Amino acid sequence: MRLVSYYDRGVRVGALDPAGIWDLRAVLALHLARVAGEPAAAHRARQAVPADMAEFIHRQHGRMGRFRELVAACADDPGARDRYVAQGMLRSPGAVIALPPVLRPTKILCAARSYRDTPAGSTPAGGATVTAAAPPREVRMGFLKAPSALVAHGADVTGPADSRRWDFEAELAVVIGTECAGLRDAAEARRAIFGYTVLNDVCLRDVPPERGTLSSPAGKSRDTHAPLGPAVLLADTPGLDPDDLTVRSWRNGRLRQDANTAELLAPVAEIVATASRLMRLLPGDIVSTGSPAGTSLETGEYLEPGDVMRVEVARVGVLENRIIAAPTRKDPR
Image 1 (cartoon, one colour):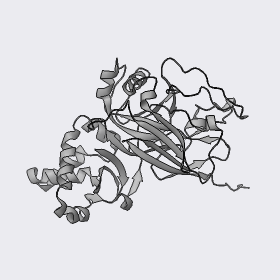
Image 2 (tube, rainbow, N blue to C red):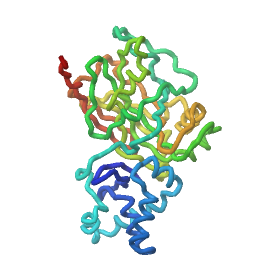
Image 3 (tube, helix red, strand yellow):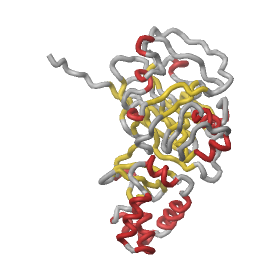
Image 4 (cartoon, rainbow, N blue to C red):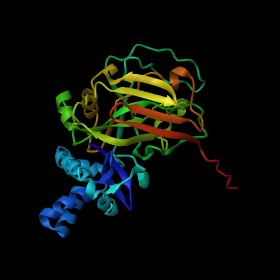
């Protein structure tokens, strides 16, 4: 099951399938109405399916089997499709406003130099060539991205006027399902994972030292610099192995990154455990597993206004966004 957040006369949590987007609150209310009557059903559905994805995850982590069955039952009733559309229970993705699947995580914690072929360091402001160094012996959590930087699949990303070395990085992102801290091993971490999504780590590689360099808020957390989505794929999806997923990115249709999560320095669950030993993780938080080689750091080909960034993690999703120039501000004088 793939979960999305979208706007349709309010923010909603939905399930994405070939038929469209199912409003999970409406699907549950329909089911409960047959048991408890409409007034009680509507109230109970609002309690079970809040509009905020992080809160929904908090309430339903480990209980998604019921929702999977209810959506499947609705989808298997093609004769009722028109009625579901009329009731707002089923929507075409093009008829709603796409949102990042998790709108309000408390944090986005990102691994750094986590693939075996990832070069060390960042491009200095002067643009000097960076030589690859031996990878670290273990994954480190390198920086935080601000939740305010999140945007959805299809949204424009602004390239700020004070930088000319705009870059982006394809990453598998983990969505946390339950509050956890100090996880001892990968087994504990797997129980804490709700699902997986795609993060585009947009960044500025020419932030000078006096402003914090690449990993600072100026380098990583500008508005729109965290495209996320388009959906969260549940961790218990049959056959899904997060340690064997192809990760790719394209700039204007030209392939630039092509790797597999098997090339990470540590399994995905161990990266989550490492993150939990640094700070408490809460439902809906994002732990991003880092990006492989092939970025502008190595190629020297930086983004420009009009470029289209495409990021794909096999089975999890495809995320596409366009770069636009920062608007010119008029002198108030």
